[in-house]
Length: 104
Image (spheres, rainbow, N blue to C red):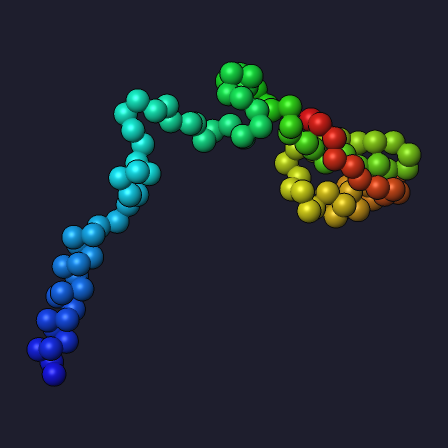
């Protein structure tokens, strides 16, 4: 029994090594085809984004305290804007009234 399992395992390992991993021949990138860059979002072409510039799609948290808007706060994550407003306004001895996402 022990030798039978060893042969079976060796056969499976041989098949895996022969087949290999990776894309099929039709899916491989051909030398003449351009490769798309993954650095920019699909909606904004790379030529419109300058090096070191922030995208126009970037949004920041803004907080309304006692009738006045404060911000932008670019380091605040999306789900935490309201919680940050509830913390920020009392620190300035103001009343929290709301939050909004606006362009930076």
